[in-house]
Length: 373
Image (cartoon, rainbow, N blue to C red; front, side):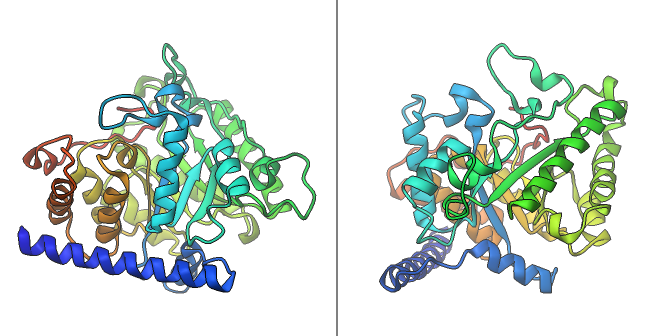
């Protein structure tokens, strides 16, 4: 493992040096770094089979989990929201993710007030809606009831931190939002979901606001939605195609985010319309091998985006974890090798891993619901 670890360390050093040089040059020239998301999406537009891969860190958990959203530190104590935001700053400065997804309140602080993205290649994004199936609160039962469309944030607030905003203020904040929908095979309820998304799209187009679309699996019990488990990924695929068929290019999402439910469903969607950039959500915390293998497998079958939340937030050292995610995403290392290299790096830093290496090399089942553990 020693030789392989040295090679990985060398690759990481080169990446870090390149990022620092780009950052220094941008500061000297008084310019902003070109956003890597825009660069990669342009490449994929011209060549859907290009190997470019987009990584997103989902630090928007405060719009779902309440107090538990920030996770825990190595000593087991809960992080404060300030400590949670400091992790965001570190990962943005590191520059190895393409998107940082946040709540509107966090984005106001970091994007508008502190301007940490001005000299960064990372794109700030905000969760644009928070449907009831992600209201995961102690004592609550919302995740088991049919998803209700709702949005705490407004586009004006995301773009400028105020409402209404004048034209000079509209670009001071984030200009990319995550919009999520959940279909439960209920005509009345699903119609409300589609109507809410249509209203959002029209407002977003009018205000020049970009978005990416997340489509969850049904969140109600199987006996309610009545879809055989093996058919759910294809139920979702058909909804995506039907939903976007009536949407012109000016109003379409920049990319999709869906649960990874195996190669067949993913390949079906990617092959149906190669112009759709399809991404996968990270799922539950799981093992380190789960995270690395998810990127590897999803990319092999057509995905070009992965958005991780809990997997990054629960890592022993978040920037180090992201570095190894990036190496796997860029085909620099295989998942199992990345797990070994990550453990070696933790050992070098004197950090005790959550699991022994043998246990962390195991592959466990990934859940597909936002609220699963």
